Length: 479
Image 1 (tube, rainbow, N blue to C red):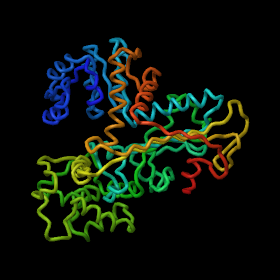
Image 2: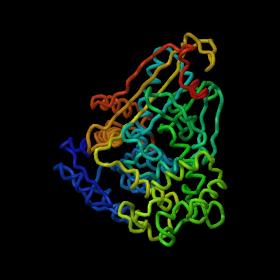
Image 3: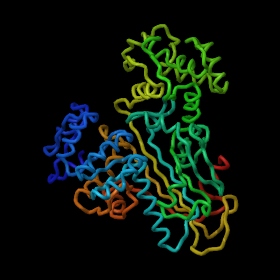
Image 4: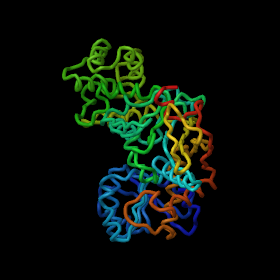
C-alpha cells in the first residue's frame, strides 16, 4: 500500500471483507480508500473491478481464477503473488484474446526467487559457461531469539498454506538421480541437516516439482543436470514434529470434526486419532499414547509430541488451574459447525503461534548454481568435482526492522507492487497467464527497483574443489 500510494497520480482502492483493517491501511494516504467486498457476491465483485484499471489479488490461491474471469470480461489486468494454478492456466487463451495480462508468481517464493534465478543464470551463460546444477531454497522464519516455540515456527499469514503444502508431492534431481516424492511424503523426505547459513540449525523440504522449472530458467533437460532442486527452509525439527501431526490425523481434510460437542480444543487430538484409528480414543494420556503408537509415531517422539500438543491446547492440560477449552480466553473460539481437522489446526496455530508484540521474523532465499566452460568435455560428479567447475551463490537474508512491517510482508508486497505499477504504466506488453520470467521487462526492472529499496541478493563465485563440493554433496551425505 505504501509503495503504490507514493505515486500521487494513482488512486488505490482496498477492497476487503474486513472494512476496519482496510480503513486502517488507507488512513495514512490521501489517495487510498477502502470499500467492503464480499468475494462471493458476483455483482459486488463485478462493480468493484469496474472501478479499477488493474486488480491486485491477495486472496487465497483457489479464488484467483474466479476474480480473473471478471477481469477478462472487463479487460482489466490482474497481478497476484501466488503460484499459477491449473484454473488460472486454463484462462491463458481467453486472457490473450481479451488483451489482458494475468501476472502471477511475483511475490517472494514464488517471485523474487524466480526473478533472481533467471537473471543469475543468464549472466552465467553470458560468460560462456554451461549450468550443470541448480539448487534454490527459501523460507520465512522467526528470528532465532523468537523461535523457542513448538515447531520453531510462527505465522504472520494464514497457516493453511503451510499445512496443505505438507500434503503435496515433489519431484527433484540430486547427484544425478531423480526423486519422486508421493503426495503426503514431503515431511519424511526432507534433509534434516541443511548447512546453508553458519550458526543456524536448518532443515530443507523439497518444494513441488523442481524439474518443471528447468525450461523456465533456461537450463538443460533434467537428465543432463547433476542436480535440480527447489526447497523450503525450516528450523531443524519442524518436519519430524509436523509428521507426527500428519500421522495422528490433524492434517486431514476429508472428515470434519465437531469439537464443540466433545470438550472443545482440548479434545482435538483424541478426536483426530479416533478417526485415524477407527475406534474411540479416550482423552487420556494412556489411550492417546497407545493410539499414537498405532499410527506409527516413533516411541522416541511421543513424549515431545505430547508436550507440543498440550502447549497448543489440543489435549487436556496437566495443570488443574487451566480454564475450560470452550471458554479459555487464551484460545480462539471453537467453531460451532463440524470442520476439517486441517482447518481447525490452521485456526489454532494462527492464534497460538502468532507473532507477539516485539517479536520479529526473517526471510532467507538462496541459490547455488554450478557451471563449467561451455563445450567442456570434463566429467564431474558430486563425489569427484572438476577443477574447471565454479559454484555461484546468490543469497538474500532480510530481518524485520519495522515493528509494523514483517520481513515476509516486505519481500512479498514490494515485488508485487513494483510489477503492478509497471503493468499499469504500460511497460509490460505480454498477455495471457504468465509468471515474471516470461518477459525481461518484468523481472529485470523488479530486481533493479528492489535493489534500490535495499532488498539485495549477495553474490559470490568460488572454484569447486574436494573441500567445497556444493550443497548437493552435503545434502546427500548429511555433512
